[in-house]
Figure (cartoon, rainbow, N blue to C red):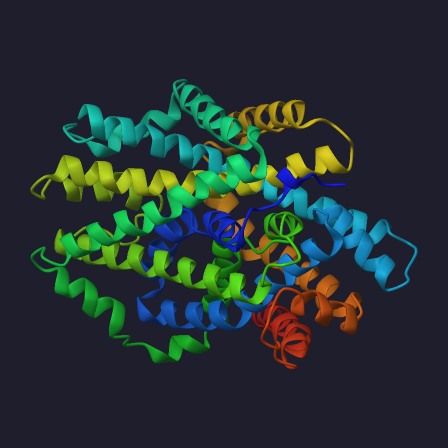
Length: 435
């Protein structure tokens, strides 16, 4: 049984915590990279369609199953089978365990990027990142032993935050950091508008020239994977956060607000990075280095560049930390509520596992891991979570739970859209990609 401290204190607690998990490097780093890779609006159009139609429904579903069952992934999917009068809970247990495992894989990869970000924040203050003659060489610290120091610092910051629990730790942190991310990105977007040749970046973004690529299944698969990656739709974090939601809160309003904040962060990131890259004739297809090599080189050529670099990496840090918190909280919730391990040793165990695994397996393989997550594992978990929510839980039970806390009647089409449009779209895009 949860105590009063195991719930968000208000609807904005959920919104900012969930938005914190959603708004991360998927928005600031991966989304601009994908936009550059696939040709501007050619990627933005499928992404926005998937985000508004599929992402919002999936988000409502995951928060709902979490609140309905008051459990994280394993307990939620087990109880979904119980509600459908299926006594064999092993399928729910197994799928829930997979979702926790995927969240952990993402956290293990994410901690390395958070370590990079922290080093660049401190390097922006000291000037070592700004005044270096070679940003590529400064970034190459990932190949030496010092990387473990930055990973440990990242894990300590994460551990201290989650140690304080849901309301005083996760919620309070996200309420400060998410508005901070939006404000800092907005400041930088306005500054980039006045760069010479930035107009070419806007033309690239909003003047698609290859409309036939909209029928390319690969682009839609990447767009859908990006939506689930960005919104943390993977049958884990949003289910856990849903279990911390009180019955008085409006899930539909919260989901819409989270999607709006996530969309705003993604578009601001693109409006910042793409025009800046064009203004200084840099490479859009530079992958991970777009954030850590290309952007620092751009700041070196802008008045007050060191200060702007600091603002940029603080925004990235806020976004990255709040996302990482959501990932590790999934495993912590499982250890607490499924295996009855107290919160403190659960945090120590998970953070140690994440740090050591990152050192052994992730360094040098990060791009492959991100592609595996966004193309395969995360959409698979999102599909399974949607099936459990919209197909296995009885329709009347699900409808009642979504309606609880909401004054306005929910659309009668919401559950059918979850069943047929959401689940069907994921399956269809998988099939199209295999052809």
